[in-house]
Amino acid sequence: MLDLPFCNASTFQVFLDEFSLETPKEFKIIFLDNGAFHKAKLLVIPENIYLYFLPPYSPELNPAEKVWWLLKKETNLKVFKTIPHLQRHIDVSIKKLLSINAVVKLTSYKTYTRNYQTIM
Image (cartoon, rainbow, N blue to C red; front, side):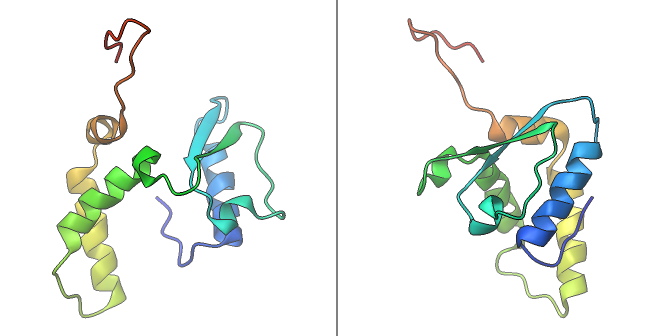
């Protein structure tokens, strides 16, 4: 797990590089909002990763928003003495709430065929 101190082009590059090493023969598609650091010219996108940008101002299409919602719900109205206390809380919450099955359930969208039968 990466716990990076900032969201900027440099840390996004670290994420891309590390993610590309996870199951390196697998081709990965990452859905992204249009954050400036996601599109920085200095980024080197690994060959096994494709960046797919969602339309602007469409958080409802971003599956990650559902994960953030769950983590925010677990964290809101709590006070933490230090940043490390907050980080520990988030780490525990991730382990408690976000199994692979939970993430799939949270982020999956139903899709329909032409005759509107559910296929997922």
